[in-house]
Length: 254
Image (cartoon, rainbow, N blue to C red):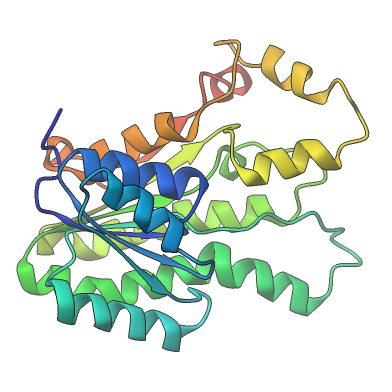
């Protein structure tokens, strides 16, 4: 599939590590020009991509703040032209009690996990509409469909991402723009490693692996491959979809 994203200006939020960085790597391999937006320092990530001869850049920005999003997108458009692919990957986890969680804590979660994706779409879409083409891939989660105690309100936010994806896909389908979601299951990311580290059960990881039909959990690169395919013209008739990348975990529960 070499050349899947040849020359496509690809913006990845949360692209400094985890699935986001894996998307940047795969997209760069496929010929994309990569621009990362992240609140974390991106110098090392960009240096690693450039070492592979990728056209890569970084803009610092907090996707939960519209002023940051507007400034970041404006800088990218001025320097690099129209955005061809937007990957809304940035997110955070939450371990909260629904009764004791404060309003501010709730808002902090949804500002990143849901509002941030909308803000990115809001400011990136005009360039896509002007070009008459473009693709957006939102990173949701298996928790959008099935979840477990102790993940509140992460599942609610990720369910919102799937709803946003479907609604937005209908809004822009007539403009030549596709919008899809990818729902990873357990993946070797900082969020999952933190979840495992928080557990008092030393056998938790073994139990999780055992629950997967494929007998393992995903690497970020495996999720990134699906994201880049959905973002490319190879998926030209796919929009409004939510693709599971969970090694068969979800199908066991209906």
